Amino acid sequence: MITTHVLDTATGKPAAGMSVVLAIHRGSDWVRLASGHTDAQGRLTTLTSETATGPGVYRLTFDTGTYHRDVNSFFPEVQVIFSVSDMGEHVHVPLLVSPFGYSTYRGT
Image (cartoon, rainbow, N blue to C red; front, side):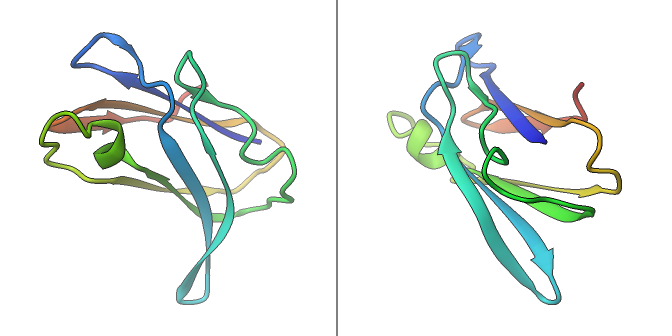
């Protein structure tokens, strides 16, 4: 299972309604697997609920530009690329975001 959540560090609140796309690297291409929007708590837990996943290199693309549409965001999107070797475990990838910066880490 691959999940994420987004926190808006500029407001100190969850980033509700942000669009997120999950893709896997196959050969020289990225193949879109799933997409969704963060809920009121900034979480997205359903990306892989209907998608078979396995070991590989994955990419989460966060539409930060649309989320920050009321300010001139320096980053129109954020892509986080990570590798998964054991799909038996829960992979959680949080994103901390503001209009002018972001940070991510391997969550639990």
